[in-house]
Length: 202
Image (cartoon, rainbow, N blue to C red; front, side):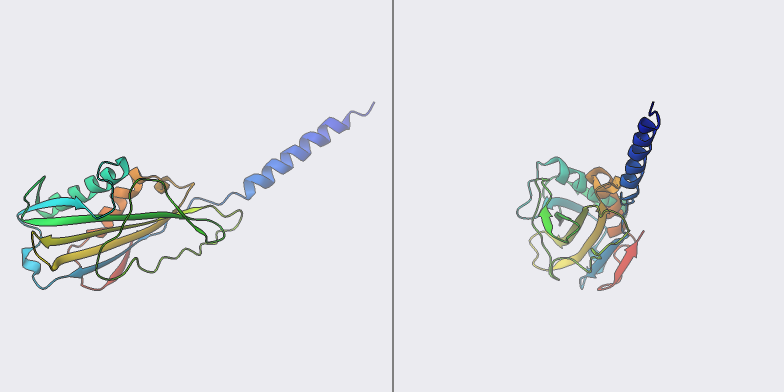
């Protein structure tokens, strides 16, 4: 009777499972990289009424945009603004860009129903997408949240900020519900910030 065969098969299966488990990339989330620009009249910031609007190309009715709008609204209220639906003395325009980068650094869309970008200093800052954690690479969700504040009808921004972060798809921060408050909190940390300075917020 050849009884060892089943045992060998079991051991082989266990070894294969262990090998597969060892190839899983640990969850990763980057610090939030933030750049702010302050206009010539910072004294007008963080007071009075402000209306939040989406940038061109963003679906204001999407669930995902709503998460980021709510996160921005809470930050503006904490700063001292009174957020109103219409006719705010100032306007805070929210822009969001999201995409997935796979192990080959190929970029693909995130189907969240939002998009577009706004601002005066280009699209994004130095994103460290070349993450190498060992094992089988995981896809990474790259997000950029931008907010500009200007007087209603004004052509010049009173303030502009952009926050960027990366999270692997096996991270808790791959979900918008977790990413939105983290990014908004970092974006407005130490408001208005030093104009032109880029910081990292854990």
